[in-house]
Image (cartoon, rainbow, N blue to C red; front, side, top):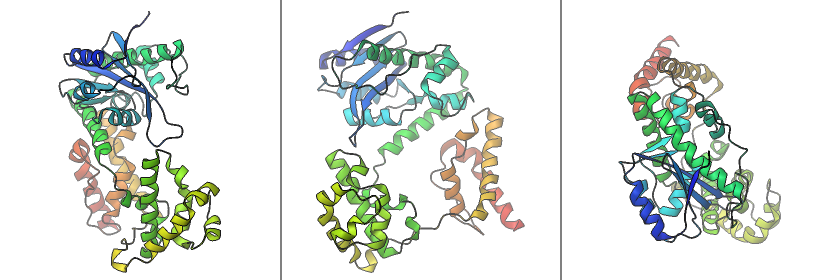
Length: 377
Protein backbone atom coordinates (compact mmCIF):
# COMPACT_ATOMS: atom_id res chain seq x y z
CA UNK A 1 0.00 0.00 0.00
CA UNK A 2 1.40 3.39 -1.01
CA UNK A 3 2.14 5.75 1.87
CA UNK A 4 0.61 9.22 1.76
CA UNK A 5 3.54 11.64 2.05
CA UNK A 6 3.31 15.37 2.80
CA UNK A 7 6.39 17.58 2.51
CA UNK A 8 6.85 20.53 4.85
CA UNK A 9 9.35 22.97 3.36
CA UNK A 10 8.50 26.38 4.85
CA UNK A 11 7.72 27.97 8.22
CA UNK A 12 4.04 28.62 7.48
CA UNK A 13 3.37 25.01 6.50
CA UNK A 14 5.13 23.76 9.64
CA UNK A 15 3.05 26.10 11.85
CA UNK A 16 -0.22 24.98 10.20
CA UNK A 17 0.54 21.29 10.57
CA UNK A 18 1.67 21.72 14.17
CA UNK A 19 -1.71 23.32 14.93
CA UNK A 20 -3.38 20.16 13.59
CA UNK A 21 -1.04 17.83 15.52
CA UNK A 22 -1.91 19.54 18.82
CA UNK A 23 -5.41 18.02 18.40
CA UNK A 24 -4.11 14.43 18.23
CA UNK A 25 -3.61 12.02 21.16
CA UNK A 26 -0.13 11.10 19.87
CA UNK A 27 2.37 11.69 17.06
CA UNK A 28 5.26 9.49 15.96
CA UNK A 29 8.55 11.37 15.65
CA UNK A 30 11.73 10.24 13.91
CA UNK A 31 14.85 11.99 12.63
CA UNK A 32 17.53 11.37 10.05
CA UNK A 33 20.87 13.07 10.62
CA UNK A 34 24.56 13.04 9.85
CA UNK A 35 27.25 12.83 12.51
CA UNK A 36 30.46 11.76 10.84
CA UNK A 37 32.94 14.55 11.57
CA UNK A 38 30.95 16.70 13.98
CA UNK A 39 30.30 16.91 17.72
CA UNK A 40 26.65 17.83 17.19
CA UNK A 41 24.29 15.87 14.90
CA UNK A 42 23.28 17.69 11.70
CA UNK A 43 19.58 17.19 10.97
CA UNK A 44 18.76 15.98 7.46
CA UNK A 45 15.05 15.21 7.90
CA UNK A 46 12.36 15.20 10.59
CA UNK A 47 9.49 12.74 10.16
CA UNK A 48 6.10 12.94 11.84
CA UNK A 49 3.49 10.17 11.65
CA UNK A 50 -0.13 10.75 12.64
CA UNK A 51 -1.28 7.16 12.25
CA UNK A 52 -2.21 7.38 8.56
CA UNK A 53 0.21 9.74 6.85
CA UNK A 54 3.89 10.60 6.87
CA UNK A 55 4.98 14.25 7.10
CA UNK A 56 8.57 14.98 6.07
CA UNK A 57 10.02 18.24 7.40
CA UNK A 58 13.06 19.56 5.54
CA UNK A 59 15.20 21.16 8.27
CA UNK A 60 17.42 22.85 5.67
CA UNK A 61 14.46 25.09 4.72
CA UNK A 62 12.88 25.84 8.12
CA UNK A 63 13.78 29.03 9.98
CA UNK A 64 11.20 29.12 12.79
CA UNK A 65 11.08 25.96 14.92
CA UNK A 66 8.85 27.41 17.65
CA UNK A 67 5.65 25.61 16.52
CA UNK A 68 7.42 22.23 16.72
CA UNK A 69 8.98 23.20 20.05
CA UNK A 70 5.49 23.93 21.41
CA UNK A 71 4.21 20.57 20.13
CA UNK A 72 7.09 18.70 21.75
CA UNK A 73 6.18 20.27 25.09
CA UNK A 74 2.40 19.74 24.77
CA UNK A 75 1.62 17.33 27.62
CA UNK A 76 -1.68 16.32 25.97
CA UNK A 77 0.10 14.81 22.94
CA UNK A 78 2.23 11.70 23.50
CA UNK A 79 5.40 11.71 21.41
CA UNK A 80 6.32 8.22 20.11
CA UNK A 81 9.97 7.52 19.28
CA UNK A 82 12.22 4.45 19.08
CA UNK A 83 15.62 4.07 20.81
CA UNK A 84 15.63 7.81 20.83
CA UNK A 85 18.76 9.13 22.57
CA UNK A 86 20.24 10.59 19.38
CA UNK A 87 16.85 11.77 18.10
CA UNK A 88 16.52 13.74 21.34
CA UNK A 89 19.84 15.47 20.67
CA UNK A 90 18.68 16.40 17.16
CA UNK A 91 15.40 17.83 18.45
CA UNK A 92 17.07 19.75 21.27
CA UNK A 93 19.61 21.23 18.86
CA UNK A 94 16.90 22.32 16.38
CA UNK A 95 14.11 23.48 18.67
CA UNK A 96 15.69 23.98 22.09
CA UNK A 97 13.00 21.65 23.50
CA UNK A 98 12.56 17.95 24.25
CA UNK A 99 9.47 15.74 23.89
CA UNK A 100 7.18 15.08 26.83
CA UNK A 101 5.44 12.81 27.45
CA UNK A 102 7.80 10.45 25.61
CA UNK A 103 6.84 6.86 24.70
CA UNK A 104 9.87 4.88 23.48
CA UNK A 105 8.75 1.78 21.57
CA UNK A 106 12.03 0.00 22.37
CA UNK A 107 11.33 0.44 26.08
CA UNK A 108 7.72 -0.67 25.58
CA UNK A 109 8.95 -3.89 23.95
CA UNK A 110 11.07 -4.54 27.05
CA UNK A 111 8.13 -3.92 29.37
CA UNK A 112 6.10 -6.45 27.35
CA UNK A 113 9.04 -8.90 27.49
CA UNK A 114 9.25 -9.02 23.68
CA UNK A 115 13.00 -8.48 23.95
CA UNK A 116 15.54 -6.01 25.29
CA UNK A 117 17.13 -3.30 23.15
CA UNK A 118 15.27 -4.44 20.03
CA UNK A 119 16.17 -2.78 16.76
CA UNK A 120 13.39 -0.97 14.91
CA UNK A 121 13.17 -3.35 11.93
CA UNK A 122 13.00 -6.39 14.20
CA UNK A 123 10.28 -4.85 16.34
CA UNK A 124 8.21 -3.92 13.26
CA UNK A 125 8.57 -7.50 12.01
CA UNK A 126 7.69 -8.96 15.43
CA UNK A 127 4.67 -6.74 16.17
CA UNK A 128 3.32 -5.73 12.74
CA UNK A 129 4.53 -8.66 10.64
CA UNK A 130 6.11 -6.25 8.14
CA UNK A 131 9.59 -6.80 6.74
CA UNK A 132 11.26 -3.45 6.17
CA UNK A 133 13.76 -2.98 3.35
CA UNK A 134 17.42 -2.68 4.37
CA UNK A 135 18.02 0.73 5.89
CA UNK A 136 19.26 3.93 4.36
CA UNK A 137 20.80 4.97 7.66
CA UNK A 138 24.28 5.27 6.19
CA UNK A 139 23.24 7.39 3.22
CA UNK A 140 23.76 11.16 2.96
CA UNK A 141 20.70 12.82 4.50
CA UNK A 142 22.03 16.32 3.80
CA UNK A 143 22.08 15.83 0.02
CA UNK A 144 19.35 17.41 -2.05
CA UNK A 145 17.34 16.11 -3.68
CA UNK A 146 16.95 13.03 -1.49
CA UNK A 147 16.65 9.79 -3.45
CA UNK A 148 13.31 8.05 -3.84
CA UNK A 149 14.64 5.21 -1.68
CA UNK A 150 15.54 7.64 1.11
CA UNK A 151 12.13 9.32 0.99
CA UNK A 152 10.32 5.96 1.02
CA UNK A 153 12.47 4.69 3.92
CA UNK A 154 11.86 7.85 5.98
CA UNK A 155 8.11 7.82 5.33
CA UNK A 156 7.78 4.13 6.24
CA UNK A 157 9.55 4.78 9.54
CA UNK A 158 7.05 7.48 10.49
CA UNK A 159 3.98 5.45 9.53
CA UNK A 160 5.05 2.15 11.14
CA UNK A 161 6.21 3.90 14.31
CA UNK A 162 2.67 5.25 14.75
CA UNK A 163 1.26 1.78 14.05
CA UNK A 164 3.56 0.27 16.68
CA UNK A 165 2.14 2.63 19.29
CA UNK A 166 -1.46 1.74 18.45
CA UNK A 167 -0.64 -1.98 18.88
CA UNK A 168 1.70 -1.80 21.89
CA UNK A 169 -0.25 0.70 23.99
CA UNK A 170 -3.33 -1.55 24.60
CA UNK A 171 -1.04 -4.47 25.53
CA UNK A 172 0.53 -2.48 28.35
CA UNK A 173 -1.19 -2.37 31.74
CA UNK A 174 -1.76 1.14 33.09
CA UNK A 175 1.18 0.61 35.47
CA UNK A 176 3.52 -0.48 32.71
CA UNK A 177 2.39 2.37 30.45
CA UNK A 178 3.15 4.82 33.27
CA UNK A 179 6.58 3.21 33.73
CA UNK A 180 7.40 3.52 30.01
CA UNK A 181 6.55 7.24 30.23
CA UNK A 182 8.55 7.51 33.47
CA UNK A 183 11.61 6.02 31.77
CA UNK A 184 11.02 8.36 28.83
CA UNK A 185 10.97 11.33 31.21
CA UNK A 186 14.24 10.08 32.71
CA UNK A 187 15.85 9.98 29.24
CA UNK A 188 14.78 13.60 28.74
CA UNK A 189 15.95 14.63 32.22
CA UNK A 190 19.34 12.99 31.67
CA UNK A 191 19.85 15.03 28.49
CA UNK A 192 18.72 18.21 30.24
CA UNK A 193 21.27 17.66 33.02
CA UNK A 194 24.11 19.63 31.51
CA UNK A 195 27.33 17.76 32.24
CA UNK A 196 29.95 20.13 33.63
CA UNK A 197 33.18 19.72 31.63
CA UNK A 198 35.09 19.88 34.95
CA UNK A 199 33.39 16.67 36.12
CA UNK A 200 34.30 14.50 33.12
CA UNK A 201 37.67 13.40 34.55
CA UNK A 202 35.77 11.03 36.86
CA UNK A 203 34.76 8.89 33.87
CA UNK A 204 38.28 8.35 32.53
CA UNK A 205 39.35 4.73 32.73
CA UNK A 206 41.76 4.09 35.64
CA UNK A 207 41.41 7.69 36.89
CA UNK A 208 41.12 6.25 40.41
CA UNK A 209 44.81 5.25 40.20
CA UNK A 210 45.95 8.88 39.96
CA UNK A 211 47.05 11.01 42.91
CA UNK A 212 45.03 14.21 43.63
CA UNK A 213 47.65 16.46 41.96
CA UNK A 214 47.51 14.28 38.82
CA UNK A 215 43.71 14.35 38.96
CA UNK A 216 43.89 18.15 38.87
CA UNK A 217 45.74 17.86 35.55
CA UNK A 218 43.30 15.25 34.24
CA UNK A 219 40.34 17.45 35.22
CA UNK A 220 41.69 20.41 33.22
CA UNK A 221 42.60 18.27 30.19
CA UNK A 222 39.12 16.69 30.05
CA UNK A 223 37.35 20.03 30.51
CA UNK A 224 39.44 21.69 27.78
CA UNK A 225 38.88 18.78 25.37
CA UNK A 226 35.10 18.92 25.92
CA UNK A 227 34.85 22.68 25.44
CA UNK A 228 37.01 22.62 22.33
CA UNK A 229 35.01 19.75 20.80
CA UNK A 230 31.80 21.75 21.32
CA UNK A 231 33.27 25.03 20.10
CA UNK A 232 34.89 23.52 16.99
CA UNK A 233 31.96 21.11 16.45
CA UNK A 234 34.23 18.11 15.97
CA UNK A 235 34.32 14.71 17.74
CA UNK A 236 36.20 14.68 21.07
CA UNK A 237 38.85 12.30 19.75
CA UNK A 238 39.65 14.80 16.97
CA UNK A 239 40.75 17.22 19.69
CA UNK A 240 42.59 14.72 21.87
CA UNK A 241 42.39 10.93 21.87
CA UNK A 242 40.67 9.31 24.86
CA UNK A 243 43.67 7.06 25.51
CA UNK A 244 46.03 10.04 25.71
CA UNK A 245 44.34 11.69 28.69
CA UNK A 246 45.47 9.36 31.49
CA UNK A 247 49.17 9.14 30.50
CA UNK A 248 49.30 12.94 30.05
CA UNK A 249 47.97 13.45 33.58
CA UNK A 250 50.30 10.78 34.93
CA UNK A 251 53.59 11.84 33.30
CA UNK A 252 52.83 15.56 32.79
CA UNK A 253 55.04 16.18 29.72
CA UNK A 254 56.75 19.59 29.75
CA UNK A 255 57.95 19.82 26.13
CA UNK A 256 56.76 18.84 22.65
CA UNK A 257 59.11 15.83 22.40
CA UNK A 258 57.71 14.36 25.62
CA UNK A 259 54.18 15.13 24.45
CA UNK A 260 54.80 13.29 21.16
CA UNK A 261 55.65 10.11 23.10
CA UNK A 262 52.23 9.98 24.78
CA UNK A 263 50.00 7.03 23.74
CA UNK A 264 47.95 7.75 20.60
CA UNK A 265 49.09 11.39 20.43
CA UNK A 266 48.22 12.58 16.92
CA UNK A 267 50.81 14.76 15.16
CA UNK A 268 47.98 17.15 14.24
CA UNK A 269 47.25 17.69 17.94
CA UNK A 270 50.88 18.54 18.63
CA UNK A 271 50.95 21.00 15.71
CA UNK A 272 47.65 22.67 16.57
CA UNK A 273 47.55 22.58 20.34
CA UNK A 274 50.88 21.21 21.61
CA UNK A 275 52.27 24.41 23.15
CA UNK A 276 48.92 25.25 24.71
CA UNK A 277 48.61 21.74 26.23
CA UNK A 278 52.06 21.97 27.81
CA UNK A 279 51.11 25.29 29.43
CA UNK A 280 47.73 23.88 30.53
CA UNK A 281 49.44 20.89 32.18
CA UNK A 282 51.97 23.20 33.86
CA UNK A 283 49.23 25.48 35.24
CA UNK A 284 47.07 22.60 36.47
CA UNK A 285 50.03 20.81 38.06
CA UNK A 286 50.99 23.91 40.03
CA UNK A 287 47.53 24.48 41.56
CA UNK A 288 47.60 24.64 45.38
CA UNK A 289 46.65 21.39 47.16
CA UNK A 290 43.30 22.78 48.34
CA UNK A 291 42.22 23.03 44.67
CA UNK A 292 43.03 19.40 43.88
CA UNK A 293 40.12 16.98 43.45
CA UNK A 294 39.56 14.38 46.15
CA UNK A 295 40.92 10.90 45.36
CA UNK A 296 38.45 8.82 43.37
CA UNK A 297 37.03 5.63 44.95
CA UNK A 298 38.55 2.37 43.83
CA UNK A 299 36.40 -0.02 41.81
CA UNK A 300 34.57 -2.68 43.78
CA UNK A 301 36.83 -5.64 44.59
CA UNK A 302 36.33 -9.01 42.95
CA UNK A 303 34.83 -10.32 46.21
CA UNK A 304 31.85 -7.98 45.71
CA UNK A 305 30.79 -9.88 42.56
CA UNK A 306 28.74 -12.35 44.61
CA UNK A 307 26.80 -9.54 46.30
CA UNK A 308 26.21 -7.87 42.95
CA UNK A 309 24.80 -11.14 41.62
CA UNK A 310 22.43 -11.42 44.59
CA UNK A 311 21.16 -7.89 44.03
CA UNK A 312 20.68 -8.49 40.32
CA UNK A 313 18.67 -11.62 41.16
CA UNK A 314 16.18 -9.44 43.10
CA UNK A 315 15.53 -7.45 39.91
CA UNK A 316 15.33 -10.58 37.77
CA UNK A 317 12.78 -12.22 40.10
CA UNK A 318 10.63 -9.07 40.09
CA UNK A 319 10.97 -8.83 36.30
CA UNK A 320 9.82 -12.43 35.94
CA UNK A 321 6.85 -11.74 38.20
CA UNK A 322 5.87 -8.66 36.20
CA UNK A 323 6.66 -10.11 32.75
CA UNK A 324 9.35 -7.49 32.02
CA UNK A 325 12.70 -8.08 30.27
CA UNK A 326 15.17 -8.64 33.15
CA UNK A 327 17.69 -6.18 31.66
CA UNK A 328 15.19 -3.35 32.24
CA UNK A 329 14.90 -3.97 35.95
CA UNK A 330 18.03 -2.90 37.84
CA UNK A 331 20.84 -1.14 36.01
CA UNK A 332 24.38 -2.30 36.80
CA UNK A 333 25.53 1.26 37.51
CA UNK A 334 22.80 1.76 40.12
CA UNK A 335 23.67 -1.52 41.85
CA UNK A 336 27.38 -0.67 41.87
CA UNK A 337 26.62 2.77 43.33
CA UNK A 338 24.52 1.09 46.03
CA UNK A 339 27.35 -1.29 46.93
CA UNK A 340 29.96 1.48 46.93
CA UNK A 341 27.84 3.47 49.41
CA UNK A 342 28.73 1.08 52.22
CA UNK A 343 30.95 -1.80 51.10
CA UNK A 344 32.04 -4.00 52.83
CA UNK A 345 30.26 -3.60 56.18
CA UNK A 346 27.48 -1.07 55.53
CA UNK A 347 25.31 0.76 56.24
CA UNK A 348 24.17 1.13 52.64
CA UNK A 349 22.20 3.93 50.99
CA UNK A 350 20.02 3.74 47.90
CA UNK A 351 21.68 5.87 45.19
CA UNK A 352 19.87 8.78 43.50
CA UNK A 353 20.13 6.86 40.22
CA UNK A 354 17.64 4.28 41.59
CA UNK A 355 14.46 6.28 41.07
CA UNK A 356 10.73 6.00 40.59
CA UNK A 357 8.92 2.67 40.50
CA UNK A 358 12.15 0.66 40.76
CA UNK A 359 13.01 2.36 44.04
CA UNK A 360 9.47 1.86 45.36
CA UNK A 361 9.20 -1.82 44.42
CA UNK A 362 12.75 -3.06 44.98
CA UNK A 363 14.62 -0.50 47.11
CA UNK A 364 13.81 -2.01 50.49
CA UNK A 365 14.46 -5.57 49.28
CA UNK A 366 17.93 -4.51 48.11
CA UNK A 367 18.75 -2.92 51.48
CA UNK A 368 17.36 -5.94 53.38
CA UNK A 369 19.49 -8.27 51.27
CA UNK A 370 22.65 -6.29 52.03
CA UNK A 371 21.79 -6.10 55.73
CA UNK A 372 21.35 -9.89 55.78
CA UNK A 373 24.61 -10.39 53.91
CA UNK A 374 26.38 -8.20 56.50
CA UNK A 375 25.06 -10.32 59.36
CA UNK A 376 26.27 -13.57 57.81
CA UNK A 377 29.78 -12.26 57.09
